[in-house]
Image 1 (cartoon, helix red, strand yellow):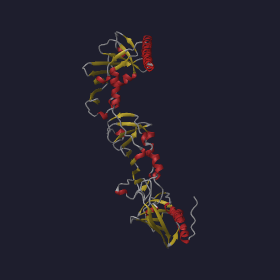
Image 2 (image 1 turned 45 degrees about the vertical axis):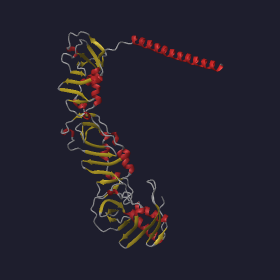
Image 3 (image 1 turned 90 degrees about the vertical axis):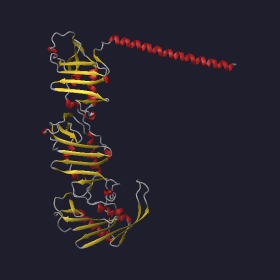
Length: 480
């Protein structure tokens, strides 16, 4: 019996608490409503010139100066003057014009029954704007002159005798130029996933870079030459790209953004876009940016367009300057020749009076099972028949592939090489490196018969001296 009483007491308690909570809720709601009503009575009334649902506008007709714009909504997208290409126009900007037509608030009423419209610039309005709604109703606005107070304008609505003062944003919407409705879409580029870059400039060498594709047959030797990107132009054969320099260059691309939309007369010679000063193509694994840069618009901006659009826009010159100053030599790895030791079987080094042979005999002891791993080998190194321990030989090998170019070669590779190095690779390919005198201080670096760079003679001679010591068993690795 006691249990039943306890249960009844519990139920009654819960019901009482519930009643109190509901009562408190309605009391607070009532108090808040009264406060809101009191605040509304204290604040000045909003002066609505138009108060409609913006989403129900289907057409906006704008006339000002020599401009006549007809904005029509088709399937929730705005088209302009019958051009049915919504992506071509700035949808947000047109929505803002629709907002001015549908929900316009006045700052004040300056005249309830004007006798002279001329003093308000309304005898010959700057602009006449008519908005049509889905139910067929229309609202028409007449924009007058600017008031003595900066950033405000006079305005009237058809069927309403009053003269209102409105903010300049409404005036800007009602006097907008067609070019301001054009949309400029610059693709977003993921700088961490760049696959291709091409930079063409007047009077300067073209720079073309592509990411090495491990699955592409043309790039099946990518791991031999230890590179992520290859510079395809302007040199006679591909060169590795320095990752840090490439990152410094490409990090500027996301800064591209328009300053102002000019129009779509791309053939106008003042823009300089028929024969642009700069053409840039950048691809990531999803998007492509293809930009043309023309003449300077003024001291701080330059005319631009994208390849897939006729819309001309301006961009700050500081955003494009990095493309003017970059040189191919600034971007590349400076190694004269670098190849992964695991893919070399033999190296022959010739001078006019000597020949040395380095044997890189190896046996695979563990095959890599993931991309994070590499194959493991047991090595048997020899120099002119002398067995060389692994650590010593690898340190000398670092000297060979550590030769660094010093500049570009402006001569044809003619003459007799003073040093020749032949690298026999595991794929039966042979890379021939020749060092031909350029002048008293430098060699031309000739790779497989082609030369783009020079190297200080002292670097090459140092390797030859250390090679003699290696063969004689006296080699001492350079101190790092």
